[in-house]
Length: 398
Image 1 (cartoon, helix red, strand yellow):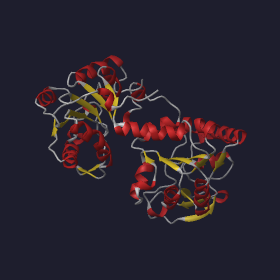
Image 2 (cartoon, one colour):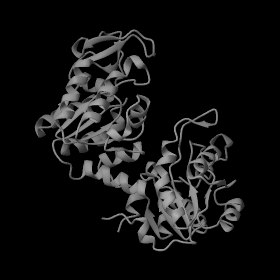
Image 3 (cartoon, rainbow, N blue to C red):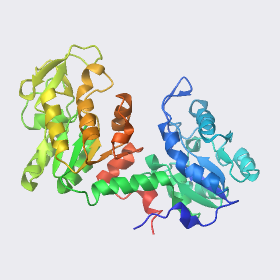
Image 4 (cartoon, one colour):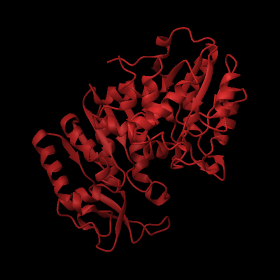
């Protein structure tokens, strides 16, 4: 199955092209604190501008829950996008209403308009197919063709991602193409040894991923809060660490399956613990079979970091999703740093799942070019690792 690309749309000069981007950027006091997602959209948008298309961009920001809420307006995005493109980008006051229609009607070749937050309309992510389809028809009336370039939302059946793609000639933008190409290289036919580093807080968020990877990976390293449920499943005392006791039996099954399939399952051997969850809590390094009952694990220890780094060095392909500890607290960031450093120094094909792992790489000051691919979509990349079909991708395939 091949993704249709922008070339498949033919000559788009003078045509109105509707683009779904992912501009769900972090804001503080109305200012964008990380414009990475806007920058990631530029190659597709610049290609359309140079082809003399009339470009209408739609995106979401936050969770306004189907109601107009000025707090989630795309106004800061329109301003930043205009700066990066070197042209004024008008922001429509609505998504498919009078203002959007008016701006679309006067749009000139090579110009860009941003429609207001698609999630201001409750039909956008309705579970009722007919509601989404009705909104998609209104989107489709604004344009001649559709380009999907918001990888962070392609795992969702939403009107601006899935339904509209069925109504207009549609194609994947450069960002979505690159994401799918890179992630499939790590999931469909990886060069071996193939390893996966999983972190983050909850095992329950990654059940499907672990089950799928036990069929595919040569090694699986577990860090982050989720590691303590694995340690508990092995009979260790985990103190006040994050523990999902209802998942212990499931995890025991994973440990057994890894042994049966010859998958090297790496768990922490030491841990940085503290009496409470806070940035200035006193950190103590302990072996994982000696975690005090009144302390919580907040990062992998130095021996574990070395163990994981050595394993990364032996691999040809590595996917990483989820931090090793509470990297936002400097005292508990060294495990995540060690994994990122090992990947940066390695010659392997490295894919970093979006969300917290991508944020950690940026926050900790790593050169993004040292990694083969950093995904812009946390949930979407996880679902690909899980082996799921993504609705917003399936609709773009021939």
